Image 1 (tube, rainbow, N blue to C red):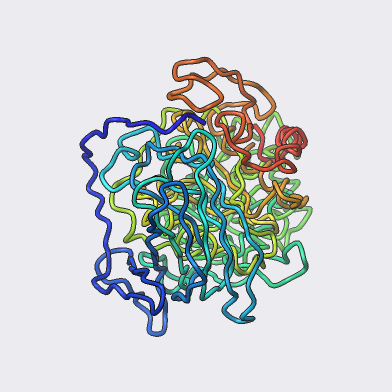
Image 2: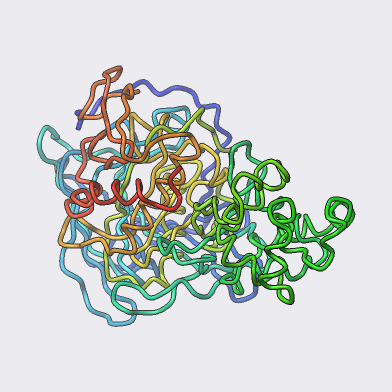
Length: 547
């Protein structure tokens, strides 16, 4: 890492405001002030009984310039913790360790190290007023007391100024603001320990090869975005508008509302055009792709159940419908009876939307920034623990969002995507999963890449599950494929800043699926996940989402 510096702070044009609650409580016997930070005006959710995510801070003061210690201290409820300091330009070199007391068990954990592989974005977002330096956040589960010690080391002669402990209560999903209506909150599969279901079950199991439409459809109109073909897909079967979604999405009975919206839009706009296009196929609306191909073959195969006949032949839910819509007569003829199954890749992997994991959108003040293209995907881990249930994945992500905004001072969560050990994919930074949203995950290379972070610690003994590795592979193949990038290739990128691995302006030849440590001096994504990257690249090249 680069040594601590005195980088000149530029005046920020950001509109970001860090909101602090008025109440400050001095904890008895400690002399430490606890400040609760809310996510904006009005820190409670709209639903009765809901709990919005909240940040609580404890100042780590002391007379010794080289270390800070916090004795065992009772706190408000929290589940994620980290340390932060005033100047994000200071790259702290030293150790920070914490212990926490379980809220339910009353048992204290062993000392655990905080990682320092995080940097503010190399853009105006990272230079905004209020942006702080910080450790990686550590998920500890529901806790109500903490003990901490921070010691400067290496070239450091003092701990950073205004050092504090940041503790995040993730609240609950109802506490998030700006949620979509009707999103599912159940499902998600078993976790690596065979424990409970996770929130926001995708429309299909990631990595299973099942066709699925992304749950998050915040920007379905994106130019080259595959999710934008969903309306065209359901536009074909207008005479059975209510049956079409069922026949094309047999596995999505519990799909969130965003995946249902496209089926409603085309229902209204296709009631007139289809009869004009398909006057002779009024009894077989679902195989409207086939009439110009082999009209005599499909009715003969299943005359009484046209809709079911489409399920096996058009397993990819969005791509098949888009092709016949644009070339109804030219495409089917040369391909014959096999043309409906020709597009073998589903449009996008299943992705749990921000609304479904309970993102508090009131935290995000500034609009997202976009890249020209995505040249690479960087793989990360969130550190913390691997003992979480997959049912807790949404809470972990809500806590990270609050930490990145309230503690770091960023505009939004840093990662573009998350994956949990059950293989469920979650939308990260807002702006559209199918868009080249600029994230804040790999300092020096954010301007070229998308970042996906696996929940858990893969440096200290954790091993990524097969489901998680396949989900990362599928997601990377799809995301890179949107920009014509081979997931098994290499790319040369120019470092935008000194990263500890590359100097600013230096050319870096990287795999299109790389680990965080390939671009920045950090242990992330952990030894076992990093060693699995060759396997993930191969799986991405063979993925049904590769192009």
